[in-house]
Amino acid sequence: MSAVHTPLLDGQIEPDELSGSIDPTPQSQSNNARPQVVLTPTNRAADNPNSMATNPSDAEAGIAGIFRQSAHPLALFALFFFRIAAITVYLLSGWVTDNFVLTTVAVVVLLSMDFWNCRNVAGRTLVGLRFWNQVDEDGESYWVFESRDPSRPANAIDSRMFWIAIYVFPLLWVALFIVSLLRFNLRFIPIVILALVFNVTNAVGFTYADRDAKQRWANSVVSSGWSLGFGGIGGQLLSGAVQKGVGRVFGS
Image 1 (tube, rainbow, N blue to C red):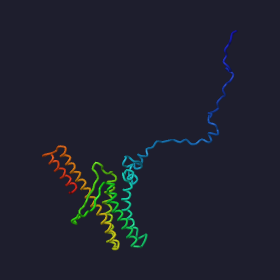
Image 2: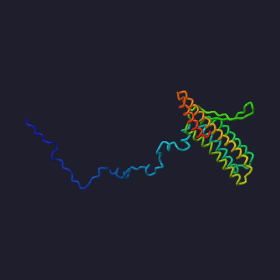
Image 3: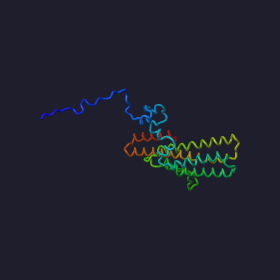
Image 4: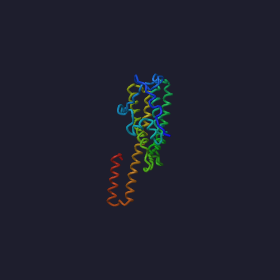
């Protein structure tokens, strides 16, 4: 038998003539189709350079960043809280109450708490410094300074914010003292004077405590130089140079 292989349906189906373009998309989908969205790449940092942080210091800026970088955020908060609260109560007392005695007691209590906290807690915790006045058996008073080991330096943020609080707030009280004189508000002058006494005492005490700590550090460097063999003329030159440099910088 001979078999003839003929293609199936060959020549039996002819294509229809196309009278136009046929949209392959169903009618229901074409009606509900959304407009085309074109995504255009942009650079917001270039358009607004202040909208994004350009370095780690910018990313950690602000009050929240300061407290995140602080090694003792509670002590730092207490230091500024008492000082800001005392000034705030003093400034707003005239709008809140007319009771002068109540205002005086509130400001004095806040100033006393700030004085004690700054000298005994904030200074020791934030910068490793402490001072007090002591009277010996002969009745003579003298300053006593304490400082932490130089091998354990203070946190940079804690130290910077501490010294800002130490020197800025006395200037604010001086400005309030001048305003009280200009406005002839004599009844509030004793409060301002008391605030100046507390703030200036802490500023002077911690300044001398810091100088004393640096002077002792310089002396320890000199003594370690001697122990390492810098004796004779070399040791004398090293000792004189360090002590003269420290005395010139810190005024001691």
